[in-house]
Image (cartoon, rainbow over all chains, first blue to last red; front, side, top):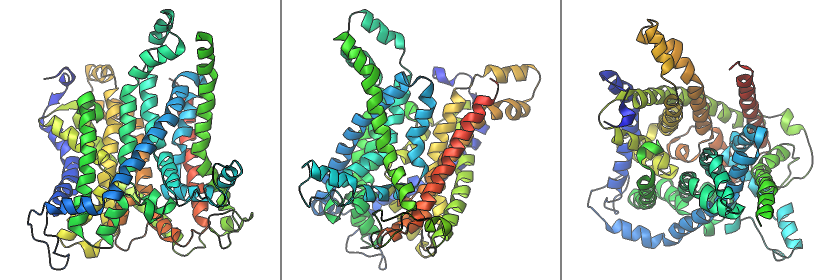
Length: 288
Length: 265
């Protein structure tokens, strides 16, 4: 029995409270996920009409990885770049809210989540207007010769990564803020009393103490970004398609379930590896 | 160096933070701007100011119907997920049971699974039991309750774990039975957490595209409508809906925090 268990009661009530919620997750999340893993090993020559045979076709994975290597790598690359950009943008913002905002703290927090208040798709389409060929961003960059004449922002990797960074930025800001907020200011004072300059204090005290938020924020940004296909579809072209676009197309257009399932499992596996690394650091009780 | 460093952290950090906020609000500004767009051929460029879109918000056929569908699904999914999730949160914090680690993992996993994987596996399940022909309102609802549940558990659990049990013990000392203690003390104290979880569920459900896209059958929610329209260029009324949503949600949150501030401590 752990210390956290003291004061908890053992009774049938606990199981009764858990039952409906967990049952829902088992039936509509766990079972389908396991079934998806099974589907990825079905005989690829079957079809939805004729039915699939379980042939343990591990070659589905090989086929999926070789056919869709480009979108796979692109997903990981775009998600990684977006995560790094989000971190660079989110850290000063979270830091300012935690330490500099004073009485404006709550207002700034509301402003961070406010973009969530309107639809994800509508906001992403707004980027289509912002980055459009005659929009102020593209024309300004052309005047500054950063973008060549006739150069575009829309329908490029830049647009897709901009959209991904934007859409998942609050997921980075909030956990960072939560862990920065918890830091005992006396520790930072102590380090400056000991003649550490601001940069050293930050590097040796603030940054290490904000690591839990940094790790959580990185996961919360990277995971949805790697699986996203809305940004690639709306702001990019098929040349920017990510693995989400491939899975969507295989499932809904091509109706090739084994290949689609194999792609999903590979995506899932990449993410589970990341999560396990995190669980090692923090433990599951910390996550939920 | 120290003084320079301090000045930089005093002011530059705030300046950068403001710029980041501007970046976050740029699309919102565009949504509002484009809701007044006198739209011609180019759907994504501002061409002139008009009030016509606001005067005729339901102009594009099917759009307002889709908004209503999303509201209905959002309401029911919130109800379901908040109820189931709150019960789980109580069990996690207040009860001892076997399989705690597995339970935590099962609750965490849906939050770590990409939506495209959740949506597609659910579709494969429905297909395998022969329901692919009858997908629609109910299957969207089932899926939304599923992915909102974990977020409710996490939110309510955080509130519940932060509660001081001294209040409940005091009530019991004053001869309140368990039932009275729960409804008079525990529930009112946890209620803000439940409300926060409900708001989160509603916005997750109302806004969901990816999972819905796999399981919607012929039912069109607002995000599904926008997705379909985006191929041809969205009607400006979509931005009217976006603006109204934004203003309503902002008013709700600011109003809520004002109310809380007024309440005596």
